[in-house]
Amino acid sequence: MKIRTPIPVKPTRLEIIPLIDIMFFLLASFMMVSLQMQIVRTLKANLPTATLATASAKPDTVNLMVTRDGQVSVDDKSIALPALFTLLTNRYSLNTNLPVYITGARDATHGSVMFVLDFVKRAGIEHVAIAVKAAPDQP
Image 1 (cartoon, rainbow, N blue to C red):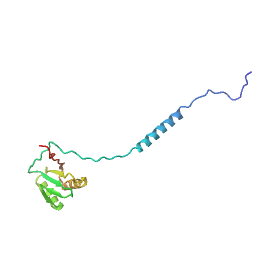
Image 2: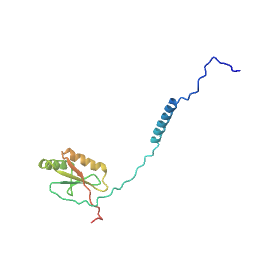
Image 3: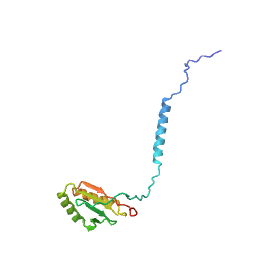
């Protein structure tokens, strides 16, 4: 004999939408945690020198050399920064396409080279390049 109940019997359903939401939340959480778990490592870089670079001495160029101490020299003659500024502005007034090449010593800091680069830009010169020297063991 079958006993009837006043509550209607519904077929069992598995709700999948909340399950998908939970899975996306877990996926996003694991991705964010895994991105923060990376160990930041630094490497010492000893950059190579150019092997085919040749120095060309043109009369319309200014070659600046930045030493280890941050001193600046123009064509192997040491110069103070105010005198360098007047030299650059005078040469720029004669030639508006004046190229300036900045060479840093091997142990010069990046900050001192960037300071000289900014100094040259403040003088109004737009054609500025970082020069490279040939390796000493190359012919």
